[in-house]
Length: 255
Image 1 (cartoon, helix red, strand yellow):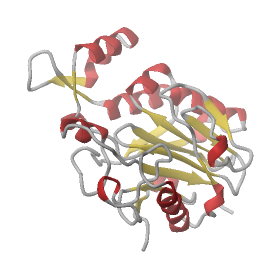
Image 2: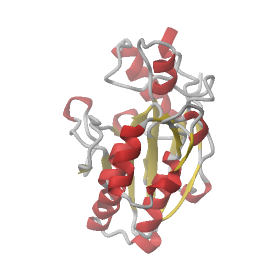
Image 3: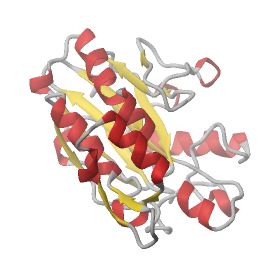
Image 4: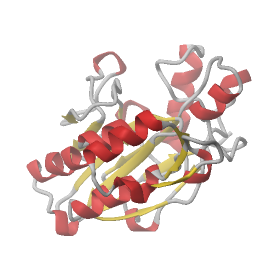
């Protein structure tokens, strides 16, 4: 059995992966590579899935350092592997230490992996629309700078997330977007229903990264549309609720 993952050319040389939902040991609604420690899945199966993911990218299972994600802007600095029990409440994590693998879990939000190969610094953040508007991307960049990275040398890749054709939003999100960014309307297209819009969250994330001076690109995958590959909170909601799994994205320094 092998955990399935996607890679990105700008991160070449860094052990990394944007994992799909395939190649794990969980079943039912969590089939099969559910990596969320906060899900209703069997914790032993989740731990096995996370170990399989580390094995797939050549990292030690004990190196995986995750977060208790809260849709905020706090960024943790991992100078050694973070145990599951010690996960900080944060949505970004950075390190300059080989042997530490940074991991975040998502199920529609944007997983963003960062690297400055010259400085030997990597980062990861969980960027939903709230976090992106609040500044989690910029906060992660600043935390990497605190470890010696330079924006001009950084690259960032947005992994699989919900894309504009799948992301209908209402007036409340539109209002928050425009209050934060007067030009935010460029991320909205008319929706099929009156008073609704199709939101380009990936476009917002990439624009924020560009504004921060970081070269960035995105994988094209749509988590809601590709049911066989990804867990999706929006898909679960439209189906009437129930338990859900999350996919892992992870990065480490070589060596």
